[in-house]
Length: 340
Image (cartoon, rainbow, N blue to C red; front, side, top):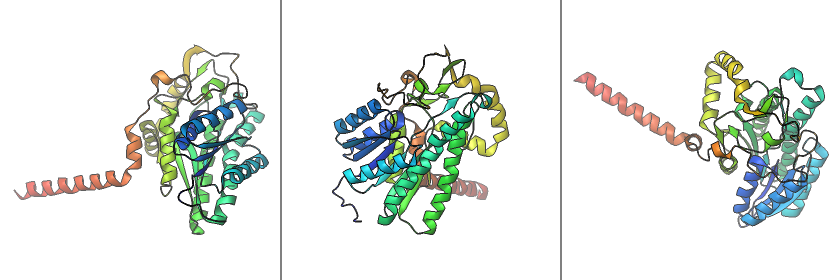
């Protein structure tokens, strides 16, 4: 298969594209003039996302897809490639979850969450690789979470899936390196994000679920994901100071973090409002089948759209050079002081 000419627009596939972070990524690629294939289940959300991409200046193809079904994923990948040409970038973002203590989640709910949130990434990655490896070109971005390293209470199914994606991606990266492949894979670890998932997640909590503060807008996550796709040589990107703090604390003192989360993890994931018994759930059926929820959730008043850690994550080399220079200058000053 031929390589893409530089003047041609990128072909991008985004899973979970009808809402939240995936929706924000789709809009951002639309503003770059990309051709974007949008994969999700909810048709109203998908069509609205496609209109967002077109309005921003890109081309869009909405492909209703259940990421837990490999045949549907490969059919969607073929549709994207037949419509727009060879796939340059594949962003895995689709997920589902259950907010509940582990023993209140049924085996069927656990299986479904795992099939969507973990195997959906595996299937998406396989579909992408099958089309990228023959050209020896392409980038896969796995949208992860601080919870890929640090499990928290009430989200055991989601945390388990994100941990699994982390291990799967590391294994695959080693294989690509062994094969001297030019196909790249990178992972972006996100903080709490203001997405519609908290309007439709299956929850058995007594109060309405919320992301653990601080909360960030999906556009901040989208910028980091696109940055990762532009520079996939970096194996991983951390987004948000809270993500960096969580991962560092977990590496240094995981036992202390266990106890801290045991005390705070239940309260911090619930608002003061009682749970809505009529809240839609999207575990088995899409919540945006007949209504478009958009990219944002209900926490916009407290969500941040910038964070200095994002800049730091993108400029490790500069920071390392600055730290080295500072250390050298400090050492020289100390030596001069000592010689006096």
